[in-house]
Length: 135
View 1 (cartoon, one colour):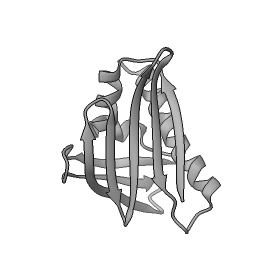
View 2: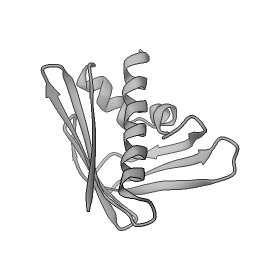
View 3: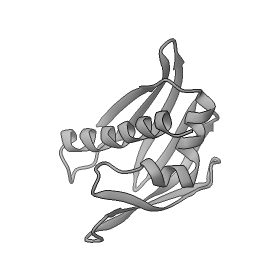
């Protein structure tokens, strides 16, 4: 089963793409709630390249590595990747009211579909807020 989350950001595509793919930026926005953060991020943005985001509770009670391999890259348009036997696709599409960022990913079985949708949407919302509030 696939799950899709989406947001629209009123910012230049170059700024959006950079914030989505730059480790220092990722560490600023990549969390589903205020009690979590990303303590480390690496990006090798090329087909076959890998990425890793160390996501951790701020009280250090739990953490995990979100890691995978890029399977397709089209600058300013598409990032596809595999992670843990699953896959995801991020589509960047210019529209009259901004840039749509649509993330579609394979659901997992540990959490409900709604929990997964809410978590990924929260991260995408944090990304939108970061892009629109930082120079």
